[in-house]
Image (cartoon, rainbow, N blue to C red; front, side, top):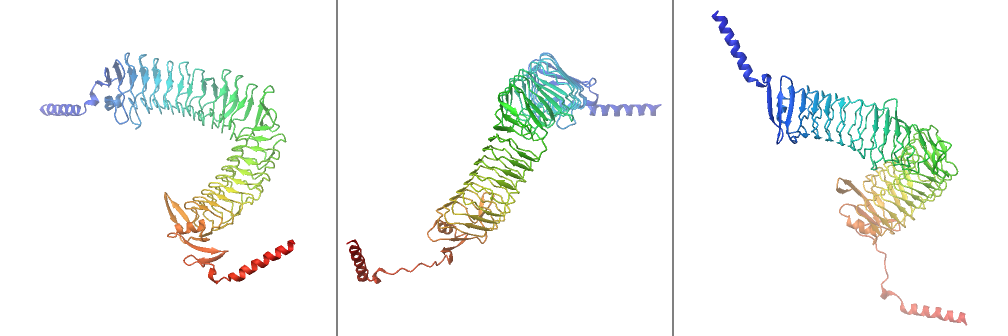
Length: 629
């Protein structure tokens, strides 16, 4: 019996010691302060955390957690009592992924007006938030709350950036009349939402607010007061079967970028009051057909560019500004201006109607099927008109005299250009057109603008056309396969970096007549080991010849030699760089040593026969007088 009692006492003592060493495990209640007049109490048996008092809670941070965080593993629900006006920033922050795993419900009294930034971020088990007085939801307040499905926004005015991003459990999102502001990425990645109505009361909509909502099948847009440019609000959104977009009859303007890069958009229906469609509004979207109502008066640049599923435009017959062409093109009423060719068409060749005189900004950009385009009657081709037309191999520009910037940039298959009247090639016009091998089609070109033919790998041998007078900044920059170059006498100016970074350039002929070679004109051309500078050159810029660059440092190319004429700008450049570059002085093409150039002999004046010279002059004068008599 004594042994039994002794064993019982030992076990009891051990139990009490263990209990004392882990008070959290058996404590029933903990409490603390979380604001000037706000307190918290946690009942570990029920798992309920009650926040009570008056005024606002304290704000916390990722590095400074509230005191209840020590007991977070017990928290199942949170109740914020009447009198408390906010939930502090980072109050239940769960970026680490292991905290607040049991917390499923949050009940907020009507006095709570603000949920702070990151307040519940990452609480993966949270299913419901009930609060009828909340007006402002802070940035990323509920981000990645994957189980959140019950959401009450009845009094909300402002939803912060990323507030509900990646809350994949939300299936219904009624937006009440109180909401005026939805921040950037506010509902990004909410893949459970299937339909959405944006009411008229919304006045501010952030970039990518509903991006990657891959369950959306229908969007009704009636937010008529949004006027600012937005980027990709629905970028990547839409169910696999497509998403239909309808604009309310109160909407007068489709703002810039609204459905930009929304690849799964299927159909668009404009309301009867829409008068303008903004720049980039459907850029890169998956829209298949567009009906332009009678009310539309303006359509912005790139509004329907890179819409690779778009097969046709239809225009209401009562529309006074637009019409549709026989190939589904969007044109002006008189059909002299083509706004957009539907890039979903699969034809490989296209001849613009004979009435067309102007091709709009980005009108053909991104078309993947066109191989040949005949613009025989077109006079003006605007910026980005054919940029990124990957299959385009030949183009006829019969009447075009000026090409605007980026007109054919990144047309990787373009190899043949016929442009008999083209004089000015704009900036980046043929940038990245790798299959272009020469400039033989540019028989009237006088000006090559900055970067006009840069990043072209197909050019190996280049003779600048005899009509060209100026080569712009970096005009042929990064033409890595260019090996031989001839710049004729009619070119007066070779501008900054015109032939920089041409890795294989090894032969350059600069003809007499060139006057200015600007800085870095041939910088980073490691295969170029010599150059003869014409006597006509009067100005040479910094590191124009014989240098390479690494970071901000410039160093001479080993073995580089300059051939120049004594007393010229070339000679001055050579002398100024003689410590790094070698040079030789030339006369009439005969190379001579720079250390002791031969000076033409001159007869001393004392050796000239003055008598015979004077007699000869008198004889010629008498002969002239006799002829006059």
